[in-house]
Length: 96
Image 1 (cartoon, rainbow, N blue to C red):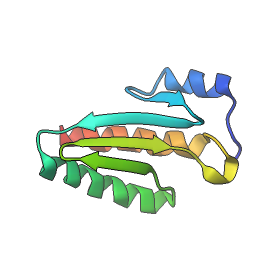
Image 2 (cartoon, rainbow, N blue to C red):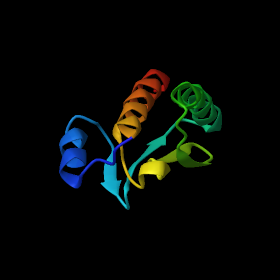
Image 3 (tube, rainbow, N blue to C red):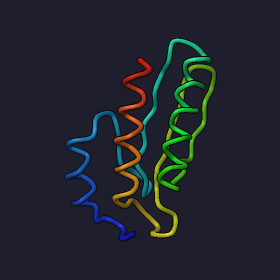
Image 4 (cartoon, helix red, strand yellow):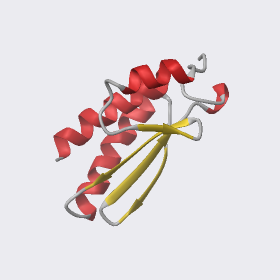
């Protein structure tokens, strides 16, 4: 995959709710009602990651989930990162 330019990334971010771009990656965080809801969302996201063969850098602390997306092979953000970010937003909306 081709690394997107800063201009392309910022343009695409206009249509992607709650994500930021810095340090050559897309970043977001979510807060859930409890640990179980957070883990449920992570499990659902994991299935999408496997389907796309693209995996986030993420951490959770009790009810919060921090996600960072970048394509290491391209050394930056690609279309695949945006595809996964959009899928994650859909999954989390269902969870909320």
